[in-house]
Length: 252
Image (tube, rainbow, N blue to C red; front, side, top):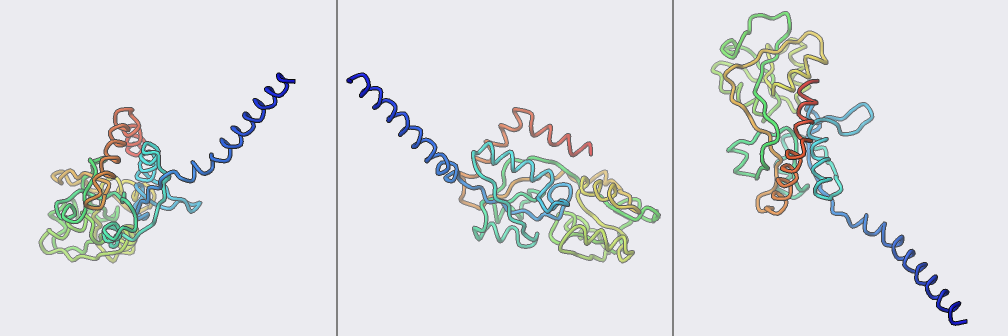
């Protein structure tokens, strides 16, 4: 009788333990912290919405890996470019990733992670237009750009240009294709992607253009999150995943 009673107690304890484990598991998963990220998903191949309506692109894959390294659930928000920094400063999301070049002007507003990608500005023209061979030929021309980008900044500094600014880069490219602009200026990998997908365009490299570094934006004062992101980036560099991702998109 004593052995049977002891056996029954052991069985009951095991059952109770299993109930506790399986009951708490969903609660533990639900308690996983969320990383809220803002992005302007209109800048292929870095961030865009694919045919299935999902976020896609280099930055999306990178921030997904970073969130995994941080042990967080990823929550993406599609935000227009001109409101993406104000939204971060307002606390609408925890950080932003949107092919954003680290500049002194932007650093006055937000902090940036360590750089994760480098690019240069490039000129896109119609393939049958050979009147433009470099930046000097843009003088007196109409240039289409995405408003507030470093492409906008670069083109605006050329004396005599007429600027046409748009909310998204695809709109700027379309203006060029419609022959309402003579050229468009944008990041080189974005230019490669545009001419690969759209007929009638060619790219002109700018030999002396400065190398630009992309960074993940974090609200000033949120030093703990910035340190977490930099730690995750360092891990992805060390284990080769960041280099593999860069190679994947460079070779497209």
